Image 1 (cartoon, rainbow, N blue to C red):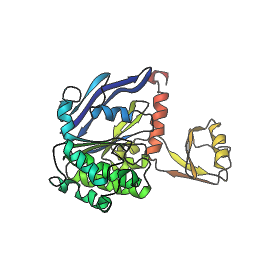
Image 2 (image 1 turned 60 degrees about the vertical axis):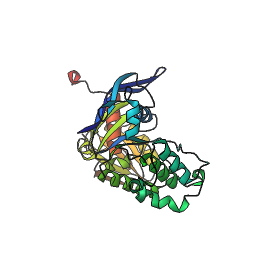
Image 3 (image 1 turned 135 degrees about the vertical axis):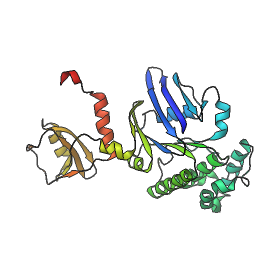
Image 4 (image 1 turned 180 degrees about the vertical axis):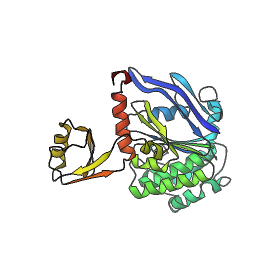
Amino acid sequence: MTTISVENIEKKYGNIHALENVSFQVNRGELFGLIGPDGAGKTSLFRILATLQLPDNGFARINGKDTVVDFEEIRKTIGYMPGRFSLYQDLTVQENLRFFADVFSTTIESNYAVIKDIYSQIEPFKTRRAGNLSGGMKQKLALCCALIHKPDVLILDEPTTGVDPVSRKEFWGILQELKRQGITIIVSTPYMDEASLCDRIALIQSGRILSIDTPEKIISNYPYKLYAVKSNDNYTLLENLRKQRNVHNCYIFGEYLHVVFNSESEINADILEKKEIKPTIEDCFMQLMEQSLNPVCDECN
């Protein structure tokens, strides 16, 4: 059953297209990821879903209700966590939580079962001001505030940006548990490694969806043989390979370069190691982005 439906959403800021004909669906109880770099359009889309912004064209529905017409009803059933920490920094942990419970005409006590596993980790600091919390603790407090009214849908805009790796891992563990409770979650992230933690993902760049599928299927659809190569000077090797006609594309990935060759013939470069590898989501994203910029013309082949 579809919980979130987005159809041909467009959004412009002046001459800038933030979103272009964006369409996808999120099923009930699904953990759906919107994956893309800064400026890709993730926040604009999430603000539309959270009824905080109007689309220029197209529509979005949550549980069958239109985000423009039925915004008051939708706000009662969603939990929204914006990219920037937006709680009251001068209020304590407990005061922030009580405030958001009051906004939704509920109490911490009546809904404590929903947040107890998360709140138990920050409860020792309940009298500390929110502005004095660590990044990971702020993240958990914000999630508690988004959950305090028992929402059906969670909309999380880059919740792990700027958070340490341990807190990132803990947060995704929390999301998996919330999913098991039947909550539908749509989360955006610029971290490609987090894509594998979602049931399905949409890769987005410059306001356009490049691909929507499970992480496994997106990887399996990668159309080339991919190699990892390295030398004593990878930057010089990168410049060298990008000049050669036999190299389709070449990017730096950590201590290796990821390379696609046009043929198996030898290349003129000082390579210490070369091995065929399985592509990552980031490799797929780069390939899809390149394809969108240079679409193949079937009539030209």
